[in-house]
Length: 450
Image (cartoon, rainbow, N blue to C red; front, side, top):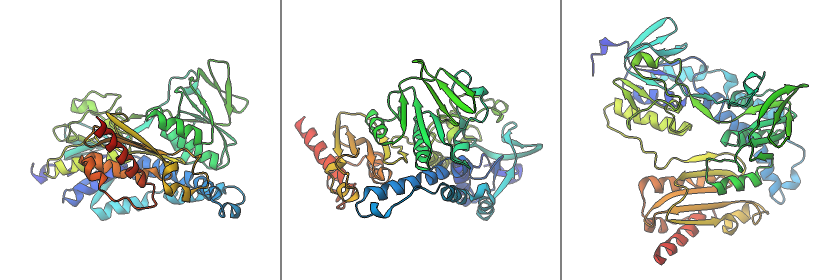
């Protein structure tokens, strides 16, 4: 390491979202002098405009639907979701868009917060407005921003929503159009349906969640409870008579008083000074090595890397980068990255979608399902396990709290636990996790037949 007096800080992090915060806390805990540069709210997209508020807005409709599914409880449920109370809860969860608590946490953790628009200004150098700071290590954690597709007319429309406007909503629209049936699109479509809006969900693919295993998307589409328009892309977007209008190749039109664009995200690589460090901005993200290193003294974590737009992956990358800076050689491993879509029912996936051996267990045959809802035999729900004959290589599921009970597959894939050991694991009864026992037995039978 260089002399501590050579730089203003040991580490400067550009971007105070969850990955940047997570990384900063790790290196501060290792005794380094750390500063985070943040131009907006400390905590970033996940805390204020994505993960936290979106799951909060989903919960009221989910809880109401769950109560109505259960004999005895359904008789006690009357009326609809109180949208105003739900939005007030959302405001509480995002601290009314005030990051004073996060700033106090940073100070208490030994992290200095530098307010302003930060960018590289050369090797080991960061400009924050008119001020320049230096550090032995600079970490880029600038995140991503909503992608607006090249639909004619779309970019010129006033008041179009992205996830930020949707999760910060103050008044529930009567009719919401949602472009994009990926995780954000399906979650927001169901959240607004639960809050009382009429919702139309649009995607060019022929099923929702087009980047996940097809069986998951088709099952969720049946259960989602929103109006679906799939299989063709909008050819034009306009605003007329107080409504947003989407035109389609077959002549159909969709109209709504609000339009949410949920067609993915793009890494925030422009305007952060990459050229001053000899790095050409790449719209696909900043390339790193397995240690999350970009160049001498330069690192990147989170969405800006273009790897996975998932908070937990960014935090994981932050831990890897911190370990390397603190002197413990560590490499990222993306073999077992869990993905969860927090709809009702939940969708979860990890690892490979296909393999040498694949089995599917339907939740209707798992005892917990019948105790969970009277409609246990008609609701979509299943667990699919994928194996190479020795270990699990993938798993995906749809069902109540699937993101919780699928996590044991993440551990099994990452640790390469032999199938024989997994078969010997005792699954508690009655739980949804018992689906693993049935699936593993079937996998064992299949591999013995070969």
